[in-house]
Length: 341
Image 1: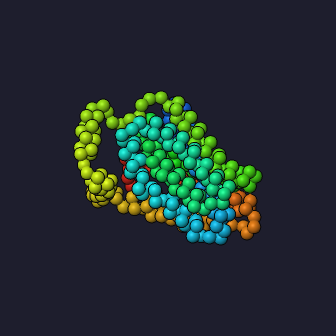
Image 2 (image 1 turned 90 degrees about the vertical axis):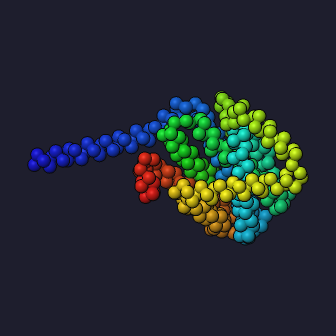
Image 3 (image 1 turned 120 degrees about the vertical axis):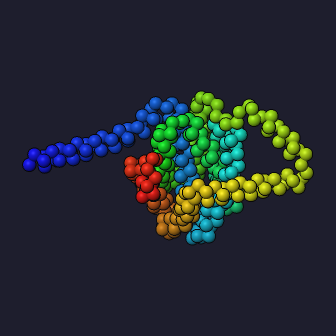
């Protein structure tokens, strides 16, 4: 009897310890945001970016339903217009992040994005599908340049390894929350104020994001002054190159980068994880087409927007729960836990 009571007390204390450990682990996220002023401003800018993204994403599917009714091909073409720039411009965004101040680059792209987004409003006003696709493509280019800068800026604001892991989880939670909240709010906004209001709100969120970034102190440029003479020598060599050489240089640089990535994936030991991510991303295009089809209510745009908002909110709930659950059961020093997830 004494043995059973001892075991029960040990199990209870073990359970209490696990609960306290989980609570303290969850509280660490709040502590990071409260303690790190720079990261707190970054998170606020991150919120503005994502809520604007989902306003535009939902509104774009509804615009296509208005400009090209019952056309799944138009939605597929929108997915292509938004995806292709990521292939060709993301590495350019990485080059910008390595050579320029990341915060200033993000601030500049925010200002440009606030202007470009108004092109959607013009497309709606004149019922121009080509102008809509052009605006979507330019906005996708801005996003492609923006993503490497915003991801790499976190590593300079949050230096500690464990805190960086927490910051990455917080960014994922913010993204999921913005899908959940943005989906419902965007659907209601379109129903009450029209599609144009969604794009105006997106433009305003760009401006707010730039305003917040302005108050993050410090310099966030990776290249030091020691590298400037080398860069000048390279620029002089590039001036000596012929026109054909200059035209081929981006292609040769891309081939060299691609070759380096392939070699690294084969040698690093986790190359297949990259293809797991790629296969998951490939399904998002089909999701957009199916979401537009299932949300469509013939002759009722307001009901369609509400349905689409609910669909995105359900996706957001899953994306919100996923990172929290994964972070509770994974540990960087135990790769097997990550394999299970």
